[in-house]
Every structure is written in structure tokens, then in C-alpha cells.
Length: 187
Image (tube, rainbow, N blue to C red):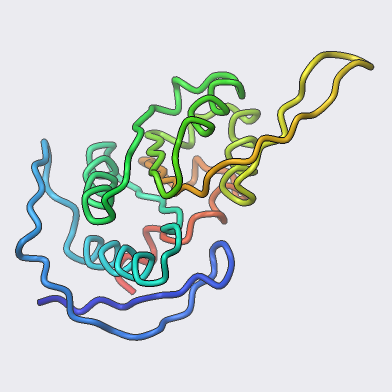
């Protein structure tokens, strides 16, 4: 049995502890190409999953620093724990905002969008992702020049799990949207 500290998100990026609960991690198996995520990280993520399930809330966004396989392992662990869908895409495949919009619009409530190498995403794509993470909506410009107008697309609440080898590659405005960050794994 491992102790799990549970947190309640009061706003994006802010959390307050609500207690400590024992969670049995022994019956959870993971098939990985590399070493499994640390016990500290899995304990923290398991606690976040339990809290989200108990409060019937969407799981908070997570930033995983390390190899892509670590982020994939964590995202698949969360998917199994929560019984939700997952879509895995590399940031380099998101070259235009329309591509980001297609992936976001196709997700269902509570689903996970795993973005590998999230710091490599172009600025325009990142801006659209930030709006989706923060407000669960997207403002999509249609047309050009004076005929241009904006269509607002409402999105299902989802969880974004970003993976990067160096958190310094993310803009501070994107970094601030992640409730779980590497510095918090051992807290």
C-alpha cells in the first residue's frame, strides 16, 4: 500500500491538499518498452485519478518531463484507471491550427490528448491548444481580410498530457496550464 496525497483543483494550475489515502498499486500492471514511471509519479497520478473519479470531474492537465515512452506509459495508465479514451499525437504532426482543431473536436468528454514533444508545437497551434485547455472552446477564424469572421467551437472537457524532454522548451503561458508538473511529483 502506498500513501497518496489527494488534491482538489481550485483553478487551473492551483491545487489544495484534501487528505491522504492508501492506494494498493500492486495489482496494476504496465507493459512498457522502457523502465516504468517512478513510484512517486504513479502514486501522484493514481491519487489524481481517484480524486477526479470521486468528484466526477475531468482529470487535470499533466506535463511529463522525460522520454516519450514515459509520457505514453503514464497516459495509458490514466486511460486504464479512468476507463477513458486516449489519442496520441506527436507535436511535429501538428503544423497548422486546423490540425489541432480536428483532434480536439474529435475527442469525447474526459478523453486524454497525449502530445509528445509538446514544446516543438508551432506558436499558432500552441495558442489554439491553450484556449482549448483553459476554456474548452476554440475560436476558429474563417475567411480572409474584411470578410474574416470567427466561429466559436465548444469542446468536450478533456485532459491534455504533454511530454517533453525539457520543460524549458514550453512557453510560460502553456506551462502554467498544467496542474501536475515534474517538480510536484515528489511533493
